[in-house]
Image 1 (tube, one colour):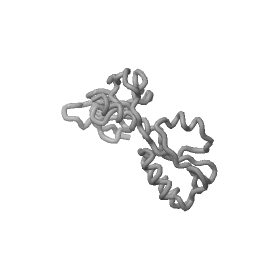
Image 2 (tube, helix red, strand yellow):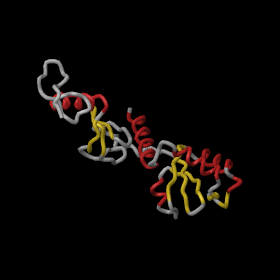
Image 3 (cartoon, rainbow, N blue to C red):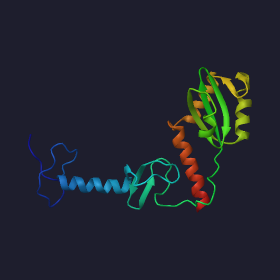
Image 4 (spheres, one colour):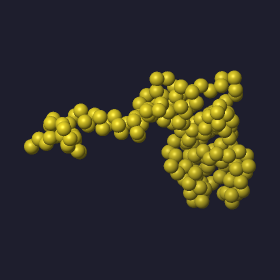
Length: 183
């Protein structure tokens, strides 16, 4: 294997043999730093995010953001204010049935329920929940439980599309509500 010279003008060092571009180690490091500043570097936060509790952040030249909810690390929420209310319509699977319900406190609500899997969150209150109940009324089994019909399963998949973790989406909504209240 023949060694190549660094492609950076004026640099006479040998390029790194496995690098995708002919740059020496110093110039590869400089390029990586530049990309990190422009695109952000994912790394642990020094302390949990005040909005969602995540420890994962993205560092930019301008500062750090929570990787989950995008709260600016270091911004302080007003501790005297109650947490923001974020109403969600939730979809829970239990066997071959799906529950369509609503809550402003999903963790507390789910502690009261028996289910196999949280399928999705949809931003909305009782009006949205009632619209979903009417939409899928033909498959209602009683209360808020519905047969997992193809149309309901498709709807849940559409609501969940692009959001593999419903809790991360909920954390983002709470962070947005908190940021709107603080600004």
